Length: 512
Image 1: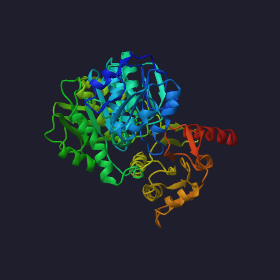
Image 2: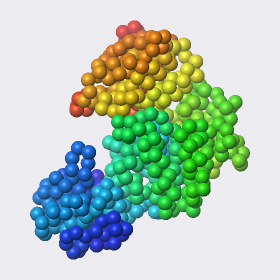
Image 3: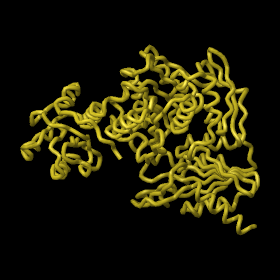
Image 4: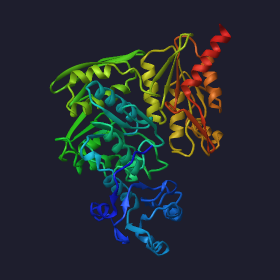
């Protein structure tokens, strides 16, 4: 729950808005004790910001907020006629409702990012693992980190569910304020392309910006891949214009990713320190000859201009080398001693839903992973192959009401890189699961490999567990840390790891 915030006068909010919004009606002598964009949360002394959304318009809910006692509204200039309907209310107007929500929230919640360093992590894959890595090492170094990410929002002893990777701007600033009040001294944030495109992070002063990679995803939201790339690049524009508390700002880029290399070239001569990680000509360079991948973990050596360091990770999969290199760069930028970075990274046992392992009494392992794009699935299965299992058995599907273009690509990758695949449902949402699977199957080519279709995900996992034998690796991809499944508009409890463990136990009881 939100804590009580120090009230601010409307006039003060207006004076610090850089003219993004202005007084339309009233005198500004009104104490604001909360910012809200949901009329159900409006109350006396709230400032209700009417945001024009994709499926609803916040202006339609002004009467509801008014009935709850709210007498201050921030509206679009085109809706100024609303003022006459509520003559005793204060109205502010703007031409950019989402930008205005971001700005007024930053002001009201005391612009925490001007005094506490914020590290932003963007990219298609790897964001969650990178934030966990940075968080763990910061704790090792005696710091008090806070994290806003896909799995949850967490700091100290507080853990809150995360409905969005990057929350709405008002919620971001509210959470950061609470973190600051609780003594957090660094904030680590996953920054999604949606959050960047919708202006949710416009008023955050980033101290460091990290780019993991860019592969096909979210083309149901972005007009094309170039638009997706430009959305990610906005994080570095924010870094460029940041008034961050650190003496120096940093950008850490994965140079082995084609879009990372492009981004690196486009960011030269910007007013922040630009560092590249990857295989060659990098500040943090991977010594490929040193890589040793096992199911129990992965080891490698990173070479920097100031020396080389051996990293021994309990996390397995080659893509975690890149995640740890990105994290290494961010932690280095924070000024944490490299010996502490190396030690802290080596102590991380797992990341929820990211190559998350379960041992079975039958001699095979199960890996649960969030891979839900073709690139992530390819890297996941390639990493699984490096461990040299007897067979790779994969359970995967694709989400409904999301990017349809990636479905055949995932079908091709999932079957071709497996010895046997079970094509099933993910979160079908309002789409017909059978139709989603048809899209997946359209990408499977003759000779790709063996597969079977089991629409029900629980049944597919059960079949895979019973199919697996000693020395096999069973990979369950797509949902990772999620503990739910959405069918239609109904959200029910469903955890891949729990389901796999259940059927392993059932098989044990059955076979003795």
